[in-house]
Image (tube, rainbow, N blue to C red; front, top):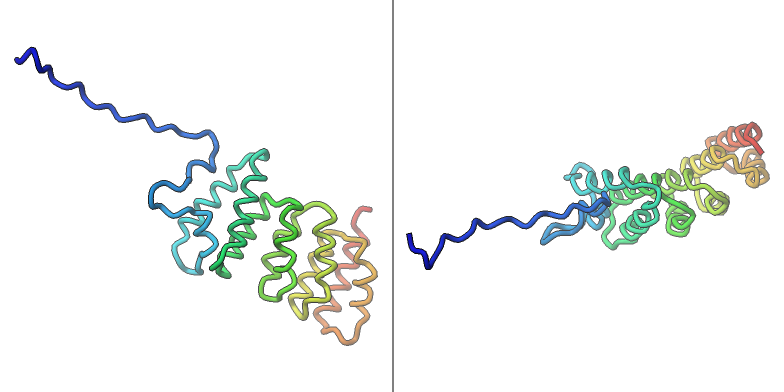
Length: 195
């Protein structure tokens, strides 16, 4: 054995540091696409692994981390190249963490027939008058089934401030039956809700 050149010590792998924050487990490493960006471009019937990663993070987020997750979802919602499937998915995730901060981003979506359902899903779960105002203000922007759905959301929230607008819709002969019936049901629900 050569005393001048002892055998090299075996190489040790550096220990991987695991963050206590669940959202950090899926950070962008190397060339791996960021799941928060990718979920905005989700396609129906395509690979949902990025969306699954985002979903796991949203579900695992403690209350004190919701604001940061909400911000990531709002950034994804505003992403260029956002698809219809991406929009629907982001709104589903926002429904778990959204605050009044999300209302301005959702309000324009609420006013378009194509995106109203996704926006309603999230806005129904946001406490506070901002969401109620967004619903009331969108009543004149929608027609047919989208408008009936919006009216249903107003009823679910028990928004007493919408009573006069709903009464007018219930009695408006120019509105389709689906809208008048939705207004009637919403008024009944509001009358039963707590003050």
